[in-house]
Length: 334
Image (cartoon, rainbow, N blue to C red; front, side, top):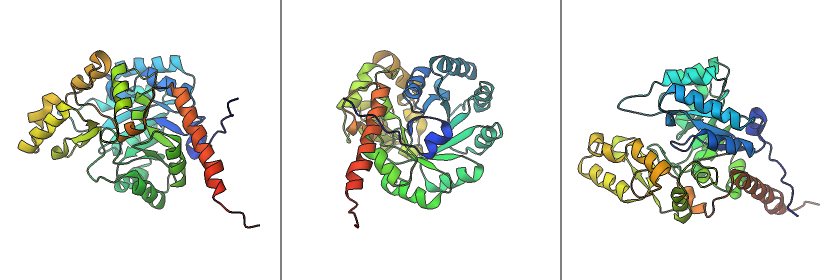
C-alpha cells in the first residue's frame, strides 16, 4: 500500500490555495500552457512564460489555453532582461490583467514599474532575484513574496555568485516578506532543507523540463538525465548578463569569442539567439547545436516522471525526512 501524503502547509500554499509548496518557474520555450497546467493539476503552481510568446495577443491565447486545461491556480512570468529590441512589456502586462491572471512571477532588471502595475491591479507578485539587495528593493516596491535564486540556477544567476546555502539563510535574516528557494532544486531533501532555512517552498525549473508533460523534445530531457553537476557552464559573463547553460561546443565557442573580444555582444550574438534555442527544444532535439539554459540540479535528475509523480515524491520524501529523520534526532528530555 502506498502511504498517504501528508500535505505540507506553508504561507505559499495557504495564500495561493495550492496543495503543495512547489512552483514551476518561468522558462523560455518551456513555459507553455501544457507545462503550467500539468504542474497546477498536480497540486503545484504552474507558470506560463510571457516572453516565449511572440506578442501580447499570442500570450492571451496561451493564457486561455491554460485555463481550458486546468481549473487550479496558475501564474504568468514576466522577465525584464536587456535586449537590443526590447519587447512591448506594457502590452504583455495589459493582456495578463485583462485575462484575469492574479499570480505574477516577475524577474530581471528594474521591476519597479511592473511590480507597482500588477499590485495596483490586485495581483500577488512573486519577484525572482539573485541578491538580497534586489530582494529588499522588491519588498519595498510591494512584492508579496521573493523567489530567492541561487547561483546554482539555470538561466541568469547574476554576477555575485552566491549559492543558496548562504543566500537563503541571509534572506531569512533580512526579509520581512516570505520567500521560496530557487536554483538547483530538484528533490524532497532540498524541500525539507529549504523549509529549515526559512523558505516557504521550492521554485523548480530544470527539474520540470525532465517530466513527461514538459513540451520539449525528448532528446533534451535525456540530456538532462545523462548530465551531472559538471554539465553546465557560464556564458555572457563579459557583458554582465551571465547565463548558466548546457555545456556543449556552441557554449564553448561563445566563451572563446568572449576571451578574444570581451564585452562585444555582437561578436557572439548569432550563437545565443533565442531562435536557435527554440529549434533545439521544439524541433530538432539537438542538445549540441544551441546555447540553452539549464541548472546544476540536473545532477539530481535520473528519470522523466509525470509532474504528479514528481511533486508527490518530493513532498513525501520531505515529509519523511522532517517527521522521521529530523524528529528522531531530538532526544526526549523525559
